Every structure is written in C-alpha cells, then in structure tokens.
Amino acid sequence: GAGVSQSPRYKVAKRGQDVALRCDPISGHVSLFWYQQALGQGPEFLTYFQNEAQLDKSGLPSDRFFAERPEGSVSTLKIQRTQQEDSAVYLCASSLLGTFGYTFGSGTRLTVV
Amino acid sequence: AQSVTQLDSQVPVFEEAPVELRCNYSSSVSVYLFWYVQYPNQGLQLLLKYLSGSTLVKGINGFEAEFNKSQTSFHLRKPSVHISDTAEYFCAVSENGNKLVFGAGTILRVKS
Image (cartoon, rainbow over all chains, first blue to last red; front, side, top):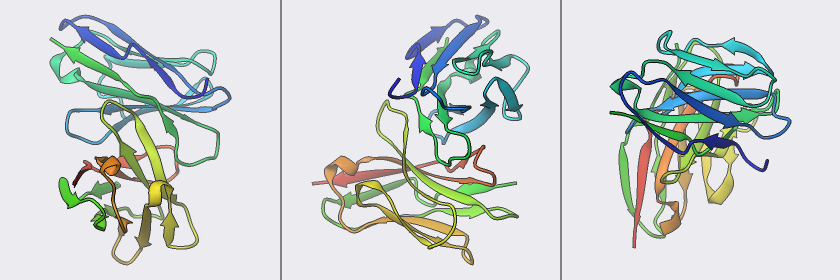
C-alpha cells in the first residue's frame, strides 16, 4: 500500500480484556517498529522487527505485551489482561533496510476502561 | 543511555514570524538526529534528519535544523511560519537508526 496502515483506529477495552492491534507496513519494507505514545508524551520504543525476526523487544513494558510478524509483512501487537496504564496511542512504522527515518502509521488509540 | 530534552512545551508565534524549537540530547556515542511533526490524530511525519556531513540540514515545508556537537543541540528553525505549521514537533535521537528516543514534544501554535 501507499502508507503504513493500522487497525483498528480506535479500540475501547474493558480492564482485563485481551486486545490485538494490527499493522500493515509499506510493501517491501523490511524493518518494522512499534511505539507507544501516552497522552502528552513523545513516542516510546516497544519493539523492532527485521523481516520476521524480532531483533529488539527491550521496550515492551511487561510480559503482557507480545508482538509478532510471522511472514515478515503484517505485524500484530497483542496486549493481554489490559490495564488502565496501557491506554495510549500505539504507533507502527516501517522502513527499508539501512534507511533512516521511517514512515509512521496513524496509530491505534487504545482506551482501557 | 540516550535522552532528548525539548526545552519548550509550547511555543506561540504570530504568522509570518520566525520560530526556533529547541532540542538538546545526551549520548555517549555518535548519533543520528531527527525532527518529526505530528498533526492532530495523525502519525508522525519526518521533517528532516542529520546523519553526517553538513551540520545545517534542510527539510520539508521550509524547515531547517543545525547540529551543534559541542552544545549537543539540534534546534529546528523556520524563517516565516504559516497557520498550517500549527502542530506538535518531536526531536529524536538514535545511535543505530533502529531505535528512536523521542523528546516530549513542542506544540507550535501559530496565531493570525
């Protein structure tokens, strides 16, 4: 596609519910990143994929967070047993290998009630 | 560890006036530097980046930034702003290009 596509655009979850957020990167982009942006703050790194390999997951805040990219294209960020502090915008970005400055999607706004 | 400080949370400015958004970073190694803009309910858009070479970097929409290694700064400037420049601006640093560390953002409010 022309840009990075994320779905759903908005998600309201009850505390304790599991959620899955989808990212469809630009075709051919090898690198894929997930960031979390809390209200009024800058994005914070969560995890990084190169093709299907998850090379860095140091930013995942707890073992309730899990990301996958099984075929090296679409990625899913899963949050289990959501808590109120998980409320944030989750941004996905992709890039060609070796380039700097990636293309971001519009994000998924997750609200946990 | 890297960190980024954006010294102003909000910058109000009149249309056609010049503006500077300040950014300071800390890192123990050489870094790559970026400025992104975020319009309401949208993702981040790359304005410009410094990788190496000339310390004055020109970006889109008439913005430019200057890398100052001795002051560990990467301030963003525009000589004449438009109403459409109203947005939030984020400075970011990376040691390897794979993981960006962002500042807290500066909201630029352009008034007519």
